[in-house]
Figure 1 (cartoon, helix red, strand yellow):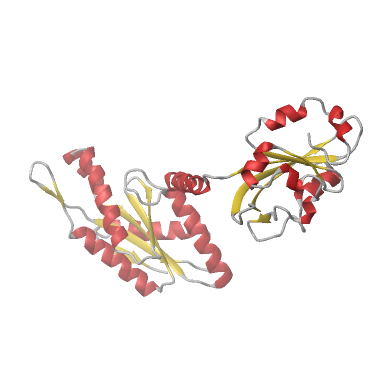
Figure 2 (cartoon, rainbow, N blue to C red):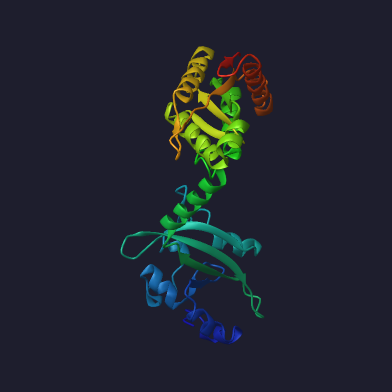
Length: 309
């Protein structure tokens, strides 16, 4: 088992070496002085360091030079092995180790207290390379998009709106960064579904989502609030500019149309309401105020946008 100081210690943990040698994960064992007593074949493959090179040396000698994601030198400060030696608790973290050829490798590290019948404290560290980290991050981003994206229109969903809105409100209350909210509802959308079919209704929703998206600044955000309702966050704006954005979106929708398979043109209009964030606002109060102005637009004839701070 390549124990550096006392080969008789092999007998204290019978069968352990044969198990550790077949693992695909790198494994090493340190004593209470953090001196490396064992280094398996996978550890050699992952790091480039042979057991002959490292066994008998202290991990505090900074052989692998583990660095955390925030740049902390773990081998000299914040070592999980040392912490596990002290309290016996298992620890997991992501770190970057130094390969023998100079590369930095992202690895998942787990430190486990290891005590046999002799009562001598040791720690076993298991580590494996996160070789598909880029793919993993890509998959996580895809999952995030799925969770926050409306599947039909491909814009943000209500959850996305809530997260974005809470973040905007936090910045507003902390730093007085102004922003406004616009809410839109498609006029007579039920008549569209009843007269042209739900397929045409879905096409209208996608048309409106795309039109709004392309009528905004890069930092403005749009989401489908639910059904035929859409919300737009307009950061760093005035009430006057919020009204301009609302009017532009209304105009773009009014002048758009869908060509149906039977040659007919389908046009729709939208009504909107908007409000600027105010001191003491929650997302619920801001949304309710914009919705109130949206309802006023509907009551006063539709195809208009009412904005009032």
